[in-house]
Length: 513
Image (cartoon, rainbow, N blue to C red; front, side, top):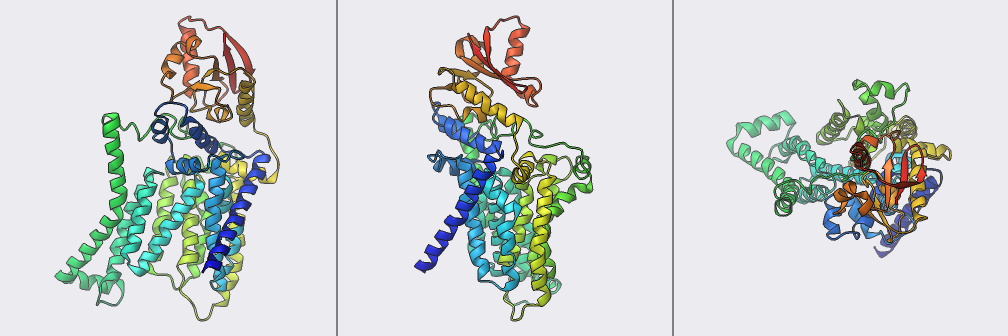
């Protein structure tokens, strides 16, 4: 047992190290993630002001990514989110790899997919929240598959704990409680003792007998209560905190700058004229294309004749849920934070829902060798034509080294400011958090979390030594409140004597004289 634990730990370390080194290589080729900078900025911000933890914690999404990164923020060689993602995806890859080695050949071949899948690799090297989404979905559906076989209260309790923890990650994940209702309804027919036969026979017996009917509904509602208890209590505690500290206003639920793209949901997206996404942008049925490109892992279920009805129902519900999330006007949801749901279901199907066969069917082994390579190819196509900027940049950084004007602008702003004397910086930090992460403790800034932010916008000559402001060519210029305050001063004829220290087509760094 001790020997197995040592082997497990060493393999985990090796996989995590590989993901981390790959992330460094991609960054050297021009890959970056504003979400990673956002979390890094919040770890810096936490000690800048009084009550910094409350100001930062309750205005950061996803909170779990922030807290996990905060624990390893003492490592200064890289942004902590890249290290955290490498650790958790390294753990997932290690777990599936060692588990797959013990399974039959038709499962072992999927280790090729686990090691080479662009989606799994992206989760481990991107520095964003995709890794946490993938882990959550995988654990969630693995527990559901296990519960559909064991009918164990233990698995229900684990589901409740999982949803309770991830309330702090993404409140929208509570929608999975609705997904569980039909699952529990049908599973309870299989739990009925003393009744055998197909689903329709069981249902007729249960609903025609008063005692069986009472047992059925008691078990059904008990399952829902057990799973819903912890997440609903977590929400209640959150609301109590709001009541005490924010006077009934949902002050700690949402705020300006609570996530890296809070000012513009369209900013992370690319609008280019190409044959796939040009149609998708019109909100047609072609939304199914990106879903199909990442969902082929579930094809394995088509020739898994031993799959249970509960498993197939779960897969169908998962696909429908994912499709509903990217349908209609939700083009901003066309990213792997949502689509990783399909990959996670596929992994759970392959590695956690197969009974042992005495003799493996040859065609299953042959298909098992073919499917991983088809999946990898389709996922490469997905990244190549993705409308999400970070996903496309990931693909481009693998192919060739590239430079990005916006990122260069942010780095130049930071470098120009570090060359100046220490002082106070007036800046809309919901937009320019990436530039602020490199500044040392000699600089302070008046941003959304500063108590003097409003006063600094009214009287920058008193409260600020430097100003960072967007230029009209920048996509987020209309959202820059500092730019709006300078326009207001100009409108009322209030002069502000400044010197331009740095300027490009996106931004300006001004020194207040």
